[in-house]
Amino acid sequence: MFEKLYQNISLRVRFSEEEFKHFSAPFEHKKFKKREVVLSEGEYCLFEGFVISGCFKVYFLNEEGFEQTLYFAVENWWIVDLDSLINNVPSTLNIEALEDSEVLMISKKEKNRLYETMPQVEKLFRIMNQQTSISLQRRILSLMNKTADRRYLEFLEKYPTLEQRLTQQQVASYLGISHEFLSKIRKRIVLGRS
Image 1: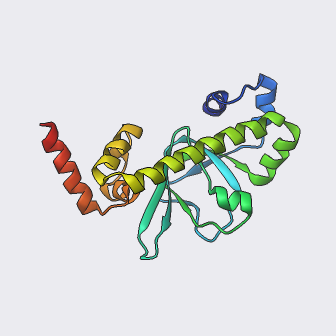
Image 2: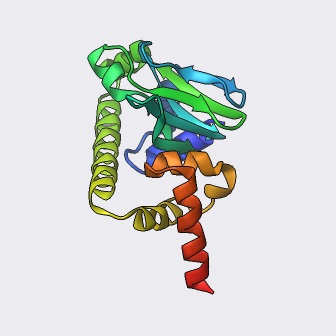
């Protein structure tokens, strides 16, 4: 179970076997059932979670009460509301399991303790936060500059196997469009390929 975590962090920093044991010790293995809520808007996010298996949606409700999906977290991704975690403010996001899922979770308190005892942990999470910022910047630019058709094609490129795991409504929420409009886009793309 910790092998996936080790592979994920090894892309960013190197730990000896002993260092990784120290790093991974505070992580708790948790299972979530499909539709189980991990974090609700208004709660304080006191954790970061590494997805071992399954799929989560990280979303908010807009002013009209419609879901807007910020991102999907599948295997080897992390789930968190960074604003709530870092700034100690109520969460504006919701995190929900879309499938039965398993996560390794570390509390804010334990993560801060690791910062003090292992300097490379700070480097690890700094790199991860930079990568998250880049990804969200690209997502914002895509939403502001690209057509829904192009955003859908980019979604398929970024998540090649994810569409089969999601409902059309969930994909549409990620793209910022209605599921009816997504149906039209999909039909155009299929016709364009034939």
